[in-house]
Length: 188
Image 1: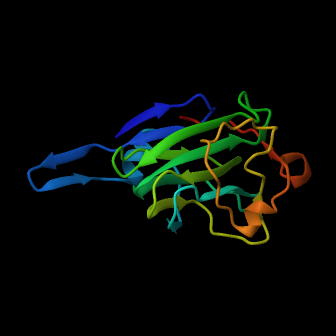
Image 2: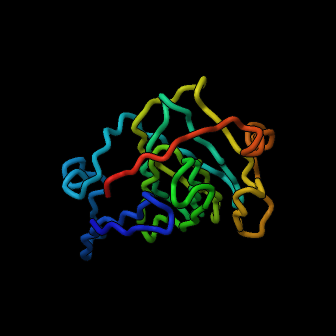
């Protein structure tokens, strides 16, 4: 597995080794022991899978507060998305900065997003499926959202009509959200 650091502190792109032949391909998308050997020791406890019917479905920006914060390992298994992470960890060298990465069934890239980040994605294709692992279970009490277009983050989303859930349409700005994380260095 190839691991690439991004411009956001502690956010990584993981690219599995793909074995192809005349029948198709095979890849190992997750191996706890191999990630641990790379210094990435997360105990994923839940798998999530979303389906978006249309181009332009925007989900996010979401996170969970401590003690239920989540590390996420995200991949697009059908179609293509723009995946976004925003560093919300006060004291981090990349505090309030964002990252956009295209994840697709074709490129097979995965994005590892540690605790303390907001996460969201925008579908670039119809009939899009996204799967991700998390290291803490969902907690409605700790679940938070921030406006995807909050000027604090200056995210340059692709120019298209976004289809939002009511929760995301009603999300507060970061300043109004009450979200607070403190930077703790991740060893990668």
